[in-house]
Each structure stands twice: as C-alpha cells, then as structure tokens.
Image (cartoon, rainbow, N blue to C red; front, side):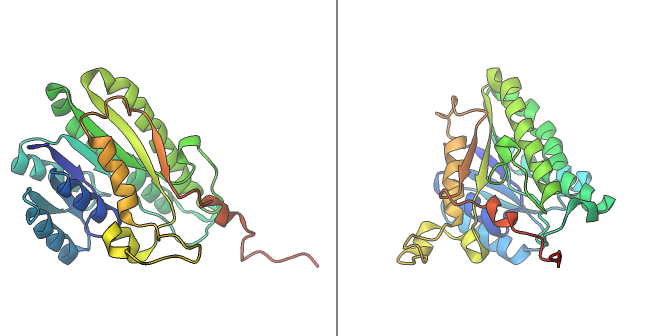
Length: 262
C-alpha cells in the first residue's frame, strides 16, 4: 500500500475521522477536509503522521465549488496524485420536516451537499486515476439509499442520497475497464462521539441489547475493504452497515405536529 493516497471529505469529526484513522493504520497517506472542526482536524493530522504515513488536513467549504477544487489541488500538491476519493460529507436536516415546508435554499443545500459536490470531486480525480489504471471511489448513503427507499420527513436528503447511489453505480459501469471501482456504504444509527470511535474505545461497553455499540470503525472497515487493490470485483455495490436495525422505520411514526381527529 506504500505510496497510495486517499482524499476524504469532512473528517475533522464524525465518521470521516474514523475513516481517516482506519486508512492510516492500513498504510494509506490521507488528505482530508474539515469545516469548523479545526482543532480536531489538526490533532487527527498529527495522529496520522504518528502512524508512519503522511496526513494533511485541509480547510474547505464543501458547498462551494471553488473551495472544493482548491482543497483537491492542495492534496495533489502535497502528494502529487489521489488514488481514492471517499466522499463522506452529507448535510442532514435533523428536524422532522415534510417536503412541502422546504424552501429553495434548503433543497439546494441538500442537493449540493450530498450529490453535486461529489460530481465536482469526481471530475477532479478521474483523469489521473484513468492514467494510472487504478482508482477507488466511495460515497456514503443511508439505510435504503440503494433501493431508493422513501424516508418520511427526510425526502430531500433521501432523494439526494438515492441519486448518489445511482450515480455511484453508473460510474462503476463506466470506469471499470480503467481499473476504477465505485461503491457506496450506508451507515446505521451511530450517534454522538461513537461516530469517531474505534473498537478499542468501546471495549467492555454494551447496549441494552447486550451488544457492543456501533461505532465509526464499523463503517470505516467497509471503506477500507472497498479501497484495497484486491477489491476489483467489489464494484457498483451498496453495503449497509446497520446491524440489521430498522433505521428508516423510526421516522414512520405520525408527525408530532399533527392533531388527532375528534
């Protein structure tokens, strides 16, 4: 794996943090973007370097095309190329909100943040990947994205991620003969600090079900698998990492704002 370079979006905190750490432990050099989490990102950069590989934290506004392309250019200046793109970023509206209440700005934010910026990044790395006959593209979805499953009160997010799943599978078909794969991972209900956690961080901790709590490394290990050189035939897939929990079903309850009929 010596010399391989991964570019991970939104990794100062959350799932991206665990992805970066997992890849560094596997020998990848990693460039990654961050937004407001500068302190955490710089600490992660140092942690990556402490593992004997190169790390580069890059400030980036992932809603802005110029900022996205500048971040990618910074990674290429440092490492000369990018072998793998892991698009972890994806804004989410936590309020349970019906689509009829969205305005244009909210809709565009979901589309640009979850779908359009991957297009920008894809175009920025694909020529170099083709020239080296190797590349790995990974997107992040949600439970059910691969089958365009409806998600009540999360319609815009679901639409963007379902579109991203279709785009990922389409790219897999277009780029396969260049030695490039494209796959999606769909995380389950991983919460709070557990998104950044590795297995060692929760050793001896159990949920009410008697199971180890899901953590970021659960998702990161799938990303790691996607990026391996031997994963040529793992292409155009959508893998759910949910522990068989019904994540989307939690939002199938009645709208709390609604009133019952008398």
